[in-house]
Image (cartoon, rainbow, N blue to C red; front, top):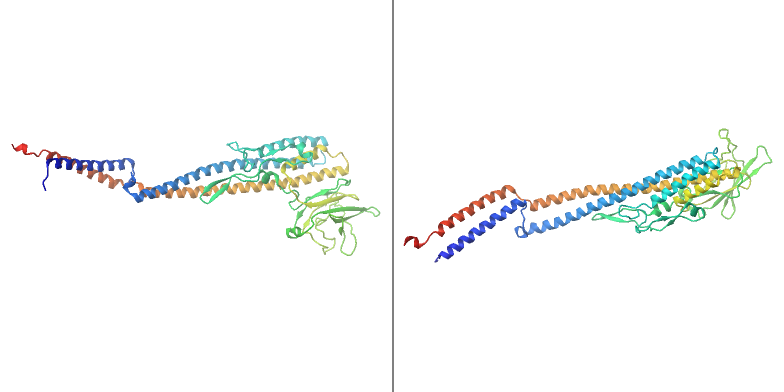
Length: 444
């Protein structure tokens, strides 16, 4: 094969360029700390690194969502915490108002503070997050959820709710979208009055001193199985004997007598006498809704009971009705109206005031339980977010390790290769310099 001088020069230059390019590539790998600078360096590893990087970016977005979700739920929890404080304060004021030594003007002063607590509660229910979205408006975050005043409620209206029942969500993992809000209806609106199963009441015409408590259900299965859950309790007093004898009748919603106080088959029997300790006629705790006779054998049992106290007069009656939904705002507003109206000093009105305060306390307890239920749900979601943050941190660490294995440089090997390439380039340059000087003209 005939080798020309041009071929020698061209081959030498090409060799030097290749060695220089290889040296430059190694130098860039060392400078960047990456084994793969272009996909051609390792096509399989480059494709895998792209997949892992995309997955890691998704995890990074989940981390942003974790922060946003924790912030929203933290704001909600703060409002709910303040709500429980307000309910507790209103309950304290209600207990204080029940003190029989207070005058009507004292109770009106208490009602004045309750109005302030009502307005404060409305403000909490209309709270917004950092983006101006209402926390308790459901999906309608830009709509102010609650509106109304004490006067509107006392006129027979409920508080207005302009939101919906939706719960806004954020994706915190590939398989979990967590609720970051709660409907105001679920928190403040749809609260079962009474004890959650039934509510008690009194007839407007009552003139005696009878007081009925909120009662409780001892056997939910029996109570729920009843087709009719509306009852009334009417009292009659036999003043022809000394001491007078009190009788009671349990009536259904059409006025049919279900039970007359007394043992089965023995006729009516008197209720227990007043206790020496309280001076009040305290009726048997199994009386009357438990519908058990004074004897050992029950006539029948509805699975519920309540306690009566005070001294009803003939013709006084009390009602039992299935629980319905009543907002926390209505409970507070009705209590304000009760305290502002006063007791007017008569026995019947004083008993009605005591009953209304007792009903309000029962409804406040139901409201508090409901708010605490929502707080517990918010707390569980915050706990779930914390757990997911920990899981995502582990996943991100695994992705980092995988990327390191795919992309990171083996410095010991690469620096050794760099030194070798420098030697190769120097040898190529020196050999080219010697070869390029070979010419026949040197021998002429």
